[in-house]
Length: 463
Image (cartoon, rainbow, N blue to C red; front, side, top):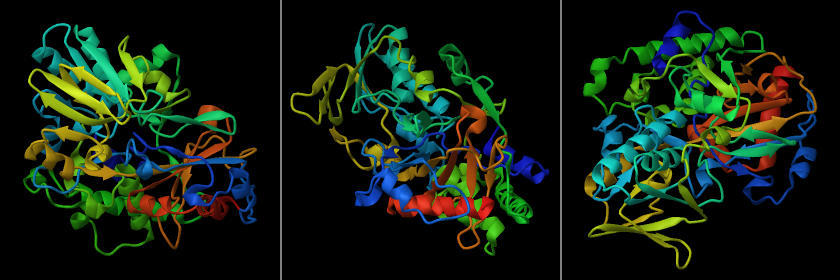
C-alpha cells in the first residue's frame, strides 16, 4: 500500500485518513521549562489559563530539530533533478565507507525501512570483506542494530559506536505521569510481511490496529475536513507515474492555489505532519515513494525499543562514543570520537546516523566525500515532526475513539490531529503533532505557550 492508496480510500468516501505515516520516526524530549524559561513542569501547569477542561497533570514535548544526534525527525524527498535516485546515491559506498538508514531505504521514514537498509549494507560489506573482518557501525538505531546483526550472522565482527547511553536512536521512550510513552516511532506501518511484526511477537509486545478514524467533535468540521481531503487527493492523484520525468516539481505546484480552512487543514495533516515538510519543500514525486506493506498499521502496547533491541544479536556496542571524524587509509578506516583517546580502527565502516547529522557536518571525512555523495546529502530534505503528550487525571473525551481532529479557524492544521492513548495503554493520555515549518516555529516557543495552545485546542473541542 502506498500513501496514495490512503488518499484513494478517502476519495471513495472512507473515513478521513490522517497521520498516515506520522511519527514513523520522531524526536527527543524537552523536560520542562523549554526555551530557557527555567520553569518546572508544575509551574507551567499551574500557569495555564482556566478553561472548560481540566488541566493536564503532566506533559512531554519533543524538540527534534535541536537534538545534536538527529537535527531532524526523518528524511524527505525535496525537489531535485535526481528524484528518488538521490537516496541510492547516498547509499553508494565510498571506498571502505557505506551509508545506511531510513534515508537510503526503499520505504523511507519508517523503522522497517531503516532495518532493511541496515541489513542490505551488512550483506554488501560481507560480500566485499574477508571472513572475520572488523566493521565499525556508527549509530545504534534500527539501521545500525540490524546492520550489526547481519554482519555478525555473515561471519564478520561488528562493533557499534553509539554517542548516547542507549540503543534505539530515534526510537525512544520517556515517562509521562508514571507510564512510558513513545517520543519517536509509534506505529508499525503495514503489519503483513513486516519484520517488526515478528519482532514484536518475540518481545511480547502487543499490536493494536489503527485505522485513522479521527472524527471531528466540533459540528460542521467533519464535512469541512472531508472536503479538504477530497480536494487535496484530487490534486495529488493528478500527478501520475509519467510525471517522474519532472522530479523537481514541488508538491506546491500541483495543489490548488485557492484554498480554504478545510484544504489548509488537509495539507497540514497530509503533508507537514506526514513528511515533516511543507508543500514547497517537498517534491510532488514524494507522494509516490514507498511501496508500503499491506495489513494496515498498528500501535504498540509496549516499548518500541524493546522490539528492536535484539536486532544486533551479540554484537558489541560502545556507548558514549560520538564519532566526529572518519579517516580512510590503505586497508583500514579510523574513527575518532569527541573525547580524548576515542579511536577505533576497522576494515570498513557503515554510517547510519540521521540525514540531519550528515547535513550539519557533525562528522568530518578524510579524504572529503566525493561530489556525488555530498550532492545526495545536500539534496535530501530533513523533515521535522514533533510530538506533545498530555496526561490527565481521567478522560473527558470518548475513551473508545482512536482519536479526533480539529480545524483551528485562525491557523488550520495547528493541533489539528489527536491520538487517544486510552485503548492502547489504558492511561488518560493524548498525543498531538506538529510538522514542517509550523514545528520549527513552535520549537522556539516556551513550554507554557505550547501547552496553553494545546489545551486551548482541546477546550475548543470539549470545553
